[in-house]
Length: 112
Length: 114
Image (cartoon, rainbow over all chains, first blue to last red):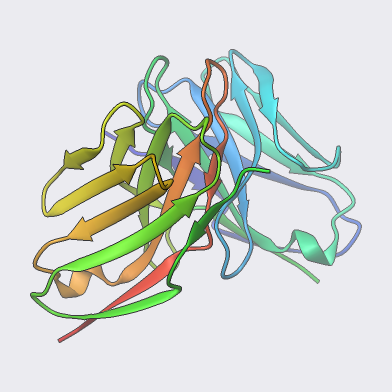
């Protein structure tokens, strides 16, 4: 049983560019949340997707957007990248009705 | 506002000893608490969780205690092993259907001394 997978593993972008990160949920999971983890800090909630809609959002600007596909996989898009967007981006998935959220390995984004 | 904080940023424990990692939370409306373990270069790994209607829950070598009176959460790891070295986060989830947000603290780095 595959766990949560994310791609790419690492990414380097320049300020002002746009980036798309991808997440495939654990088998049987239909809810995807995205988190940003700056170095030395705990993850910060960005938003959550369920049934292809954004259901809840944290304190992140509109530059951060997402999408969920019919197969429950999800994308995180960040526009107009800033140096401060450099972080580990994590997705967490859970099955409908469950509480446990399982995290993927993350995508390390570096903005130069 | 809600926050989850940790009492100690670092903790060193002799291999084989028990370790206790503490966490304070401020949102009395939270109904679900989780401990995660994060090793270098990896995503957080679920360890154990507890609902707000419980005060203790045990897993394999781990026990989570919840004291709602003082808004305190702890993780006890028995007979620590080198593989337990990692950063440990507590996280809380607010009450209500559709409230998915997990609020994390900054983490405690646990180092196991051989």
